[in-house]
Image (tube, rainbow, N blue to C red):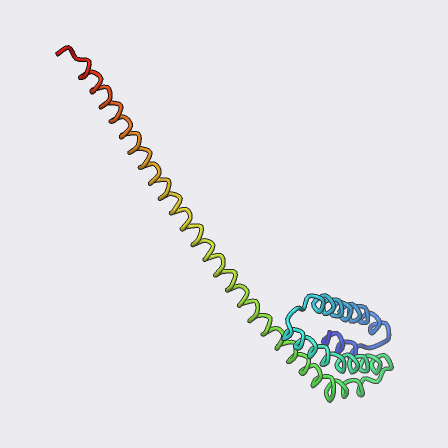
Length: 171
């Protein structure tokens, strides 16, 4: 929207300036909307402080921006350009600095969250892998036990048959 503002100041005629007013107003409304939505999601005190810094920096920037637009609409190009150079650019830089601090914090917070998620997935994956290994191992052990019990039962049945045959033998 800063580029649109400088285009507005450099524009010749009210019709061209009016045409630039639409995207300028749209960009400003979209910024307000995004900031409002973001503000509602803030639950961390540091994030809140950083966001308040952005809002504090945006207030004088917006007031100066509107002043430049007013001068531009009045056809006062030289005064508008002077206001951009002397006031708006430093205010824009302060706003960018505040926004950059928020971005850096969010990136670090997102990286921490991503690392926590990866660790949880790795732990969960490891846990699942251990459970699968244990299940396979337990199933294998259970299978071995069943095989052994079956063999013992057959051996017992065989011994009982042999004993019955031997005990009932005619000799």
